[in-house]
Image (cartoon, rainbow, N blue to C red):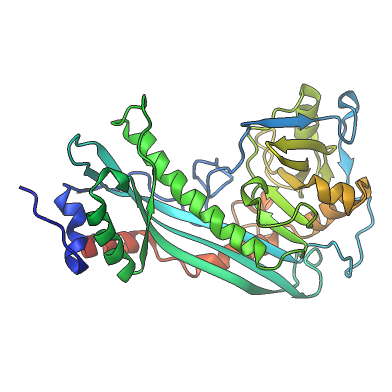
Length: 376
């Protein structure tokens, strides 16, 4: 017979009381800088793109039949005091895995429990220009936040016991995130789908930390590693915010557009196109930052995204701005040959990853600590 789960340290027995089992190696986290997460081989986190409710205006800068690569190297580099030069760089991380599963009361549904570390950081140039000398401006940490989180479908369990477990976790530096239970019609025993739901919950929480980092200095030209759509609300539509997306599997270009993408040379971009997601409006284009591996058609290419309101109302809708911004990104690209994702990463973003990695514990060590606390 299951015993009552009390408060304090006794509440940490919550998992054992519900028949929890350790999970060894299932859904192991990728290395912090090695990629391999669901977003693809060039990403260390799942893609934050979506095509739900998406509308494209492919003839925004150039008629579709006239698409061709545009060289940004032919554009004069903007001066170091260019007011629209990106000077802030934001990155976020979610590193974790399912470490246990337990049984819900009554129906005995399998409930995966994910242990993760999430964080976001903003680095800011304090001298020089981020797009010159290998992005070699002096970068200082403007804001950084890292959290350890535990995620599972807590609404399947008695709430007073979940509250006790939450308080006990918090006393040891962990925060509980509740992911939603299977909807009606979904198979509640499909473990992989449940695992993905727990992962999505921590990813969304990481997006929240990124939004906080974005909003820390509003109005400052900022580049974020990822799409802008998941950061809406953290910046005004007329702010000079730039998203650099490493994975781009859901953009439905026309055939000529994809031909241009795969033909891009170093320092070349596609014509810009309009991209609307619900009430969010962007201008986007593909860019090859520099020389790099080209084993696949779209490898070593990023998708750049800015607010359409900013481009049209602040930058005047001038394609020269697109070239100047692209030139800054190319000049600030990562040149570390030993870094696996150098071809699609900016040097300041690599530095931001280092700043986060310094605050993350080794995943196996963290899992062992969690097992010890919960007596699994």
